[in-house]
Length: 271
Image (cartoon, rainbow, N blue to C red; front, side, top):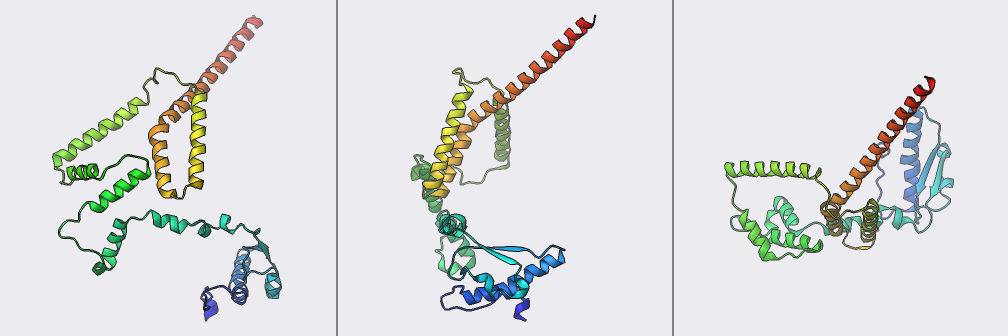
């Protein structure tokens, strides 16, 4: 019955996969499943099993395969590459947990186990939100003060009326229209060359890549980098895109003009 569950259940005092367990898994679960899949799909019996270097994966594992599974070829990753190739060794879980705030944890546990979460009288205060906003702002290099954040939150604490919501919708719509029209506006008086824009965008990409690889706070720095790119550099990217489109269009016009001129000269020559 256990062999039909598609899962190999074994116990180990250290919760490790041993060589014996791994060989059983290859012969009972992996080999049989792969062979059935290949036969059902009319494919040749060929398979490559890619493994990392571990005590449970010794070099002579192919010798322990049953004769019916000798078509499986085992290939090992190069030494000292596990931390680079395997996401679990890149501290992804630790990095993800760094982005989880106390407020998020309290909100989650309040649903699961309300007795262990601090209860508040009436409406939950803004203090955790203020701390979260200040923390995010500081990680982005902004000057943020808790008092300013508290004042801002207080201004929007009351529910808006229907009339106020309609007014906000009008403002939002007008803002979108202004953004669309601003894309067609003339560039600043101080003209920038396309080469200058390309150079500064390239430098920013180098800085962004360096911070992403070297800074331990990957989540917060990633947000700050994306915000700066969206708020500051998108303007210059749009200028470069418009110029590239205009250049392509100008080349097309020159090409058409030349072809028409050549046709005209050819007609005159025939006459």
